[in-house]
Length: 187
Image (cartoon, rainbow, N blue to C red):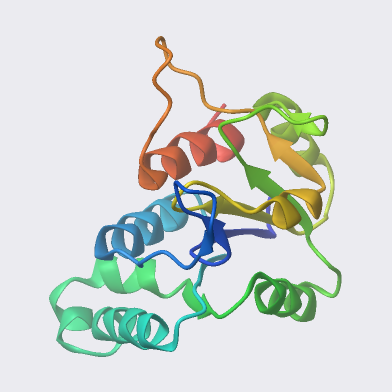
């Protein structure tokens, strides 16, 4: 069906490069570019998950500018893309919102640069999404990735994106675009 697809960009809880659990900063590029990518691939909602109040307020202000402020009249395409973007303070609140909207808890799909025992390939997940009516929440981590507890709550973990070198440090915006195209693109 692919009608109940949600995407979450997790700023908290994630690891920093020392392995500490932190809240990373929301970036303007991630708000804009991922909103536009989600609209392009018809994702129901894009959830920006951030626990720091000041960052939540700033993110909501940016979204509001493009939905209700001067930006809404200036760029209708951006207004449309931001119409599906929401801010949540936790993964749990994001899941609860989806469950309320869809009438059932979403399957949790996480992304990582590592292989896990419950890793799934893009083709297999794409077919699964096409052939059932289950809601899905695809979580992307910022910083140095989603914490172990989030990975443990996943129903599936997508295989890493592999390039032609041993360098594996894509921007999250690039990873979102590649993954959504593999899962929801024309083919």
